[in-house]
Image (cartoon, rainbow, N blue to C red; front, side, top):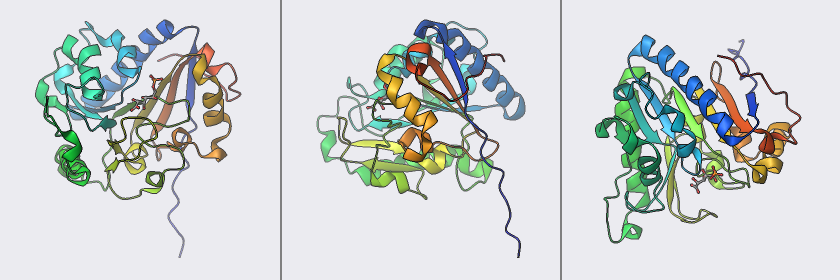
Length: 267
Ligand SMILES: O=C(O)[C@H](O)[C@@H](O)[C@H](O)[C@H](O)COP(=O)(O)O
């Protein structure tokens, strides 16, 4: 019997701009176009967002009347298991850099269940926390899309100098996770050790994954990720199934050694 064939993933699209600040407007325009296409079709826009320098890179959205914040449903691509108001919390960072500056309803931002000012988050059971976060995703996606995995309209990610993305670190057992939507890790090589993360099955069913990476400290890892995917760095393994698509918004310092073809940015 013939096996069903699945179209191969689209090749990634790489946009490189002279400086980090030159990335801001094109990135905002790209997100707005994705938002419009999605809301026109289904009336809501599901977004996963990570920490690091990424939230600040979304400043082009602040004050922009075209952003339909009330239609955004935001999840964290990964989160550190610390109180939500802790300096290490990705939610805290996103609030400071972005969400406190725009009219997004608080109910549309899905946080992990670690109360603000909680005095001992280390006693919280990671499996319970990741199950509870997965339930929030199921509530958002499962009945509506009736799919085995959620299909985020947009996932916004950074990369570490070791090639990690989300809390998916090189050589870690979580790289082989095939079933759960949200996983936990208690041995992150980058502190803090205890984190939750979306898994590859989620990343690789997204409609669009956007990586943002700037600065010379990313130059070697970016060329390994794009030019040597066979090395299997965590970020190289983000290859959403057709018709999903990976986009890179980088600066010329980060892409200086990349051989992979770059595209001219146009919408
Ligand atoms: O959870 C973390 O430890 C960080 O959020 C991390 O994953 C970060 O997103 C990348 O290292 C990229 O960071 P920069 O964008 O700041 O380089």
